[in-house]
Structures are given as structure tokens and as C-alpha cells.
Length: 191
Image 1 (cartoon, rainbow, N blue to C red):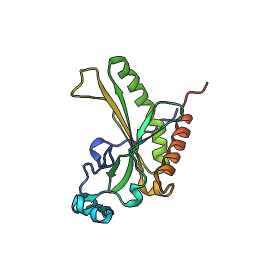
Image 2: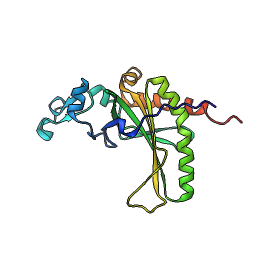
Image 3: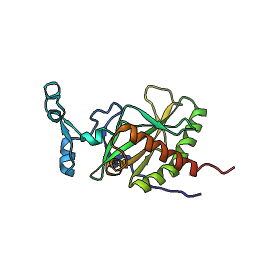
Image 4: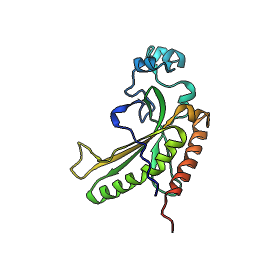
């Protein structure tokens, strides 16, 4: 079995947009320092509402994200499509998969699924010029008890690659579903 380790540490990237497609942790200075384009509220026609705040994505980049998910056609593994990130001076779409658990049995299953994501997503990262972040320990939720939490795996795909494949979210999500299915099928146990 091929084992592809194409992972990056958590402190190496900064989220640009969150689960609501809103500005996350990135700053205007970070984007300026990297020489990357972005929008201002005045560019978006909403200056009177938001002042002249910045939005980290261009119009073309923004067209590829949505408060939605994409997933494998035959499994219940979903990736949130609203997140984006800055990593090593480049902009990436950040497909976030969170696997929640509420008891010890679910934690074992969530860890097994989380572990199974690395090779297929690593292949996609290699093919697209992307990266993978994978939480290997699971994060307990502060408000839950000791047996609850989640694992997070993120597939980063460069915007420059994605914009060469799609101009809008519906095209991009169809493309993603296809490459996810192909990559995960390649790593399914042979029967």
C-alpha cells in the first residue's frame, strides 16, 4: 500500500475565511506582505455598510467557495467548502473534514476514518500542488465530557490550480466530487 505523507503542521497556515465564508484570522498586512490580491468593501459595493474593510479573496476566488459541503458519493465523509487559508505566501482552498465523536466507541471509529483519509488526500495534494493537515490526536471539546471531541483533516488546494479547473462553485464542487471519488476508490481494499 502506498503511504503518502504530505502533511503540514497546524501553526504553518492561517485561515483566510471561516465556515461562513467570512474573514477569519488572516490580516490585510499578511496579504500585502505576500503580494496577494484581495478585495475591499468599496470594491464589493458595500462600503457604506462595512466601511472600507478588506476581504481576503478576489471575486474569482470567492466564486469557488460556499457554505456547503462536498463528499464521497458512496460514504458519509464530508468536506466543508467555505474555508480558505494562507500558507507559505500562497492562497489555498481548505477543504475541512471534521469527524465528531461522543463516546469511546465513536472515537475509535472516527480515528480509523481520520487515518484512512491521509493516502487519498495526499495523492490529491500531490496532483494539485496542495498540502494536507491532519490532526492525529483528536481535540476534546471543552463543553463536552472527556469522551467527546473531533478529528480534523484539511486538504489544501492552491487557488491557481482550482481557477484553472472551474469558474464557479457548482463547477468546482463537481470537479472535487470526481477527484475525491477516484482517489478514495484507488485506496479501497480489493475484494
